[in-house]
Image: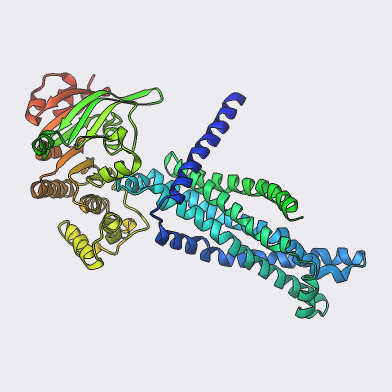
Length: 254
Length: 255
């Protein structure tokens, strides 16, 4: 039983490797599916915006509520803006955005491609002499990679603003004070590398969603399974990748 | 040379073998389809007929044997070469396999948009022409989810014919259709064949389709060709399996 499980996992990674090689070829070699890419960027980016705004705002409020009392306890209340802004920029914004997009987009890609697979639509694309890796996979993966950093910037902004608003409900604090004090410790490495790392999250979300979707078998039940496994595996990979990337950023940018 | 090219079959299959795990679905199939000829493939459900069509268009790879389409061996072609060849083939899937996020118009226009430089108005004219022959000129903006099974098949046929293929591969074109719609579908395929003189491989269980369309029939059993000939010849075969297939008697299962 354990041997069979190990073999299945190794097979899964092997198939993923082959899938990645085909994807890389499809991304690099022209012609490029720019029209479909733009459609996917709208689908993945614009339509995730309300969810990202809402979750970013919630994170800012929660951070403000939680950290305020602790900082008061240590007599470090004046550090509240810095703490909110740094934690949002470094970690909360990117990871929350990635997990929210993973839930919405990862499941969507897994289910959509899964349904296309079981209804032979992917075969029909291939039979029409069109490379499905180019049309379906590359466009979704690249769109995820391009949209994640932009969505993260939006989530960061919302979290920082609601952090200020929540604090303002308790005591008066001007926006200029909050911003100037909050950003005084912010460095290049706190924003650019941490936002850019979400491209890797986007790659994982798009890749796992497409991979699970295109290997769907077993009718509608299989489609549901693909949607679920896409979210579960992609979330796990995003969190694990985050550990590696945080360490990498520390090593590279000090 | 040109004469030689013309003489070579549109499709040549030799020693074709395909298995899925333990299940052997095609076991040494040999067949030729001449230019302009329609070959009908009969066989039991799950007997490898649809797999044969997918092998012919390169959607699946054979375990052994060779497939030549218009003289070119599929296995030797790089992906670009295979795609060039696929442009000469039209494939109607069993359940039409229409792209469900595209309208009827966009589905039919898909291969034209991808592989031709037709201006928008010319492409639109072509799409309308293909669909009006199928009585669907009023359904251009509907999504596949909004049309019936028979209409989906007609759109699927229009999409397959859009790039003006040399060879048609039709997977159960009348399956799941009522007798009237099935007869209309057969009529559409006959009209197309007459107008374009294309070769075709038709997989079907429907004996009316066989009678109307087939120049030649092959019957698959156990992954091998059991019988081959014109429909009249096959009907006269005295093998019990063949007889059960082409002259079915209700309540008597083939043993």
